Amino acid sequence: MAEPETHVTVVDVQIPFWRLIVLLLKVALAAIPASILFAIIIWLIIGSIRIIGFGMMMSNMRL
Image (cartoon, rainbow, N blue to C red):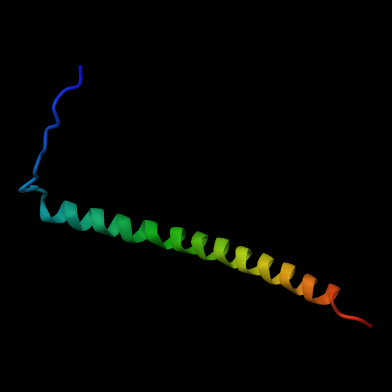
């Protein structure tokens, strides 16, 4: 038998100021390598699309 749904509303979170600062600094520092990795992945995807597109363009050319 399924239990009825229970809705919960969070009204307050008590976290010390300096712990919040440390947490936000960790998030900011973790974002740096993540953004570098994301940029490399996008660069590889765009580069492979350009190579494929250039190959198609060269195959249609007549010498």
